[in-house]
Image 1 (cartoon, rainbow, N blue to C red):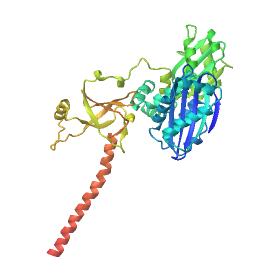
Image 2 (image 1 turned 90 degrees about the vertical axis):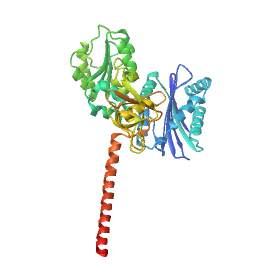
Image 3 (image 1 turned 90 degrees about the horizontal axis):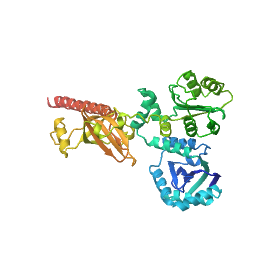
Image 4 (image 1 turned 30 degrees about the vertical axis):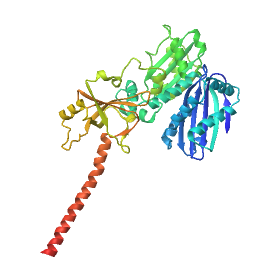
Length: 453
């Protein structure tokens, strides 16, 4: 068991990597303990098959470590369900006084007993008798935790919800939106600059189209001296935004395009030169820091579109007529509910045991002679995820008729792609069977003619 501690006062972040050799499972758990109360503010985990995560070297950046955990989920075979089990185990294992003692021990660099307790909890969850652990502890700001939590929440968003946020930035540019949603790329570049005396500026730019997303500029404010480019980016932006006043020039006019390009290119000289005209003086020699972040995560921390509502945020009253439907499962070839996009075509079933459902079954002529109901083609209208990780799915059946269903899990369902795939794979097989059957008939006729006639 290896322990490293750099924690002082503030929120405590613990990195724990472990190897359950008896099950060939390695994992990482990242946990946060609040600075202002004796409670865990977050516990995030990933478990994979193999020992790769136990060999991982932690980065000083909390954000980079968390992104690495997300990457591991994509690159390795994960052990499903363990992340929730570990989260629940930590949240229920300690009462307030015990968490206070844990925090004190970490601060005083007496972390051996803490790591042993954490090892016991993880070993119980994994049911492992042969577990190695390596723990590191450090102090982080509240904002750093909020960023990790924002990333975690964005990972849980449905494709529909992510797309709705990105529409505000990229309109109907589906190629950019699809790339960001699928790969989780950091599509926003930002620059933080200050001379610690007379001005501070924060500029956020899309590195996909080099357009400014949001900004803050404060000049000749006594509070500028309190802002440091080393501050967490959200704290820096908020401080500068709070001190904007009538004397501060905005980025509404001037050569904004060149300013944005310098942010994306991360050119200190270029950014200082482009910033100077907005200050009416030279920005040479100021401290500048560049960074990147995903726009969906950024919107969770610095609301960019709070005044706008997407179509998918409508509730039942906005639909003309809504009836209950059922989804058709496709465990191997289907698409997960969280991956569905508005406009995707799926097949749904209407309930013949419901008077309302039976009415539409008859109106749409879906009842077969044998008493079964034919599936109905429908278009995905919206997908909503609730706090229990369940999904409410709305489909558009006709112009005035919508279907609604609720699923507790992120199941795979049949879409038009999986249906067409079935047709394509089955058609050649049917053709071969038909040809073989025809050939057999011809052979029988020929033999009959030879031996009988």
